[in-house]
Image (tube, rainbow, N blue to C red; front, side, top):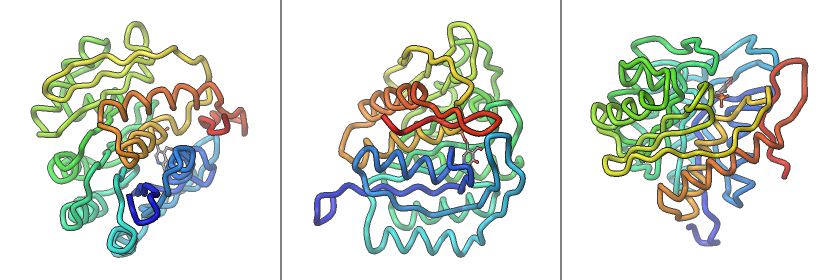
Length: 265
Ligand code: PLP
């Protein structure tokens, strides 16, 4: 907490012009938790509910300057990373996290869309794996990202559990949450937690909606918000999962395509 007892969190992520994912949903999630939100924008996407039409990376120096400006003056109790786009940006962010000793870091390893398309190249994945993820309090891959990080195929709940353990061990990360959002069968809407000790399956009711854009961003932002408020990691994850379930219940039927999760409840 800072002087005025306001918790502060930082999101290092991309801008989504449609307001559904990225920086926009992260700041809304922080605000809902009464956490002051700060941001370092990594890239600017032009997108709506139908898709992304353009992505412009911010210069690496601009990203470093944003992180330094926030941390050196205001200070943050927690941070999250989202879309980092390329190897240069990932390396720069990893270096700043180390130098500025940013704690309570939630890494949402945005690499593959929910539909399964790879968003960053192999070199970038390697840097994420070796330089950034080991510094995280928790990493939150979706099923496809967990496949890349573990090298295992994931088609059911058991495989999600195995992947969580493999990622924990191989990447030397404090805790792992494998998200089952896009799974079918017993893995549907179920997330798997492993912290080297407890292997837990987190279940909530499945919300039937096509408007799921921003789910992953909102989850990692809600974990960071709860960490900033002083909750332990396990509590933060459970609270964040509840928040996302409600955000899906209140998701927005806007645009012609897939709408975003909602924060107005
Ligand atoms: N960050 C940005 C800027 C995005 O545009 C997207 C997806 O379009 C994401 C993150 C990931 O979104 P989601 O939370 O739906 O996985």
